[in-house]
Image (cartoon, rainbow, N blue to C red):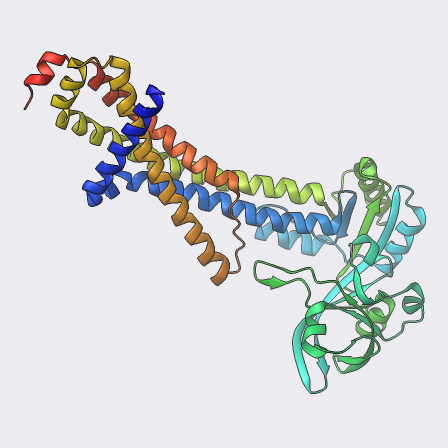
Length: 412
């Protein structure tokens, strides 16, 4: 009970010190505030971007991967990119047929091919809509769900029908209050009948993931040709078969392209684990940079707190002498100043949390960067700042506890 009262009294003294000299208190805590704000802002940025990566991985699935003409994970290398563009031929429909026939470790494999198109309906025009030519199994592979109608079918693909599956953005723009299924829209001037509307998937970095149209792959090839842009989207038999399935596809494609053992792959593959590994490297770099900045702020803030607490010990030497004269032990004096220093730093941490929260709101509302403040960031920020105050308060507290009561009473 006594220790609890002592803690409360010390905390009240610390708060009183803050109120008595607001400017000095702010300058004292500035380093802690900046450190906490930076730490939480970076953790919020990483958390927001984690959601983006999770969305990408969930679309691909833990057992899914894509085969592309060129894959560059990590820092861009212009020379390497130009070399890949020169060396790697486009994926072809013949290769797709070969893989579909020969692969034994795949549950599904489908075609994706993209381009920007213009979409019109009833006098309204939308430019640069993402159009995908896709096989009928892409909905299952990419986890595309329909809220109205259906996805394109194998029959649509085989017969090259002019049908389209649209994203929710187009439904909202063209058909806000009516059923879109059965209506006709014009894609690059050609009429297409809507057979389904996709479930909304939201936006990432300010870019909508619902601003698209999907038409049958064979219809796409008939309309735009098949010489460039084809990608294969595949799903392994299970997650445990993922690496073996990728190796099988690599072997089959190398065989189809008659590549010699000493020749590099002329294609690329990317799976959910590749995205996560790339993201982990990126977050490690961000975290290392943030850690260096935060460490500097914390050390500066801690040194300032230590100096202020030394000044406080000097100012209150007579008071310390009185407390010791009436029976206060060294431990009581030590605890008092440790509580004061950690309380000061903890308040700086709370101010930093508020600043980071404000920054996160501004960034989220006025930029395309997603920032989500996790509860763990708040706990880490306040806890770390309190520990810094505790650590840098040890020397002043020990100095106060060792004061001779008679000499302290003589101090004016």
